[in-house]
Length: 103
Image (tube, rainbow, N blue to C red; front, side):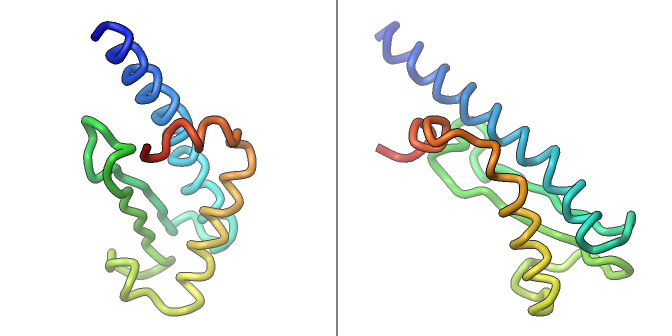
């Protein structure tokens, strides 16, 4: 049981390292692509205890607008959000992504 707990802890730590990296970068990139310091992008795990078991919410606030669910953003706003997410991922290793996935 100790080995299983060690693996779970390592999986959690690896996942959170990647998650925190993406979280830190995504807002910066979104602001840059939106060309506005008032733009915001943020991530949140749906299950903070075991974030790799459930989804991750990704929300953006377009420049000069109020918070709205991602589904209610315009096509252009969604595109900027998608590019922001894509551009902060290349530094992640495949091992981190594979270890974080469901088994």
